[in-house]
Structure formats: structure tokens, C-alpha cells
Length: 77
Image 1: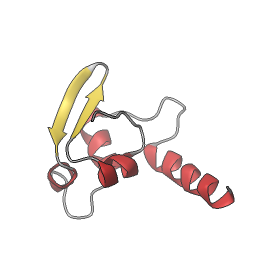
Image 2 (image 1 turned 60 degrees about the vertical axis):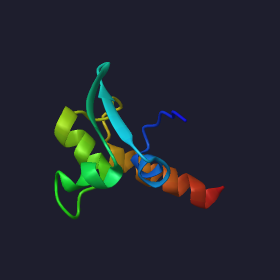
Image 3 (image 1 turned 45 degrees about the vertical axis):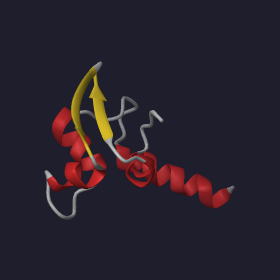
Image 4 (image 1 turned 30 degrees about the vertical axis):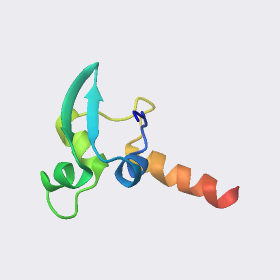
């Protein structure tokens, strides 16, 4: 199954392999553990994406902001 998401927690939890696509190009492929290991023990997939693409969410926020907002919404639903 192929899924697309901007929510790195979902990718980390549900995907066997992950490909980071930035500006139409596949930048990095691997398991969540492999990708996070490129930056160290405390790294998240958000950290990996930012490191290898230099990208932020276009709204001016970052992936942690989106994750925090999504958690907040879940708590209120």
C-alpha cells in the first residue's frame, strides 16, 4: 500500500519504508529507524526531513507545530 502524509508520526508508526519527496524528487528512502539513525538516537522523522531537504511547511510553521496542533485537535474531539 502506498500512502502520502505530511504527518511524520503517522509515517513512523504505520509505514515499513518511507520515501521523502521534496520538489518532485525522492530525496531519501529507508525504514523509519534507518532514516532517524542518520542523525542520531534522539532524531525524529521531522528532523530527518528538514536536514535532507532544508524544507519547512509553507505556512511558515514547522512539522513540530503541525504535530502539536494535530494532538490538540485530537484531545478536543
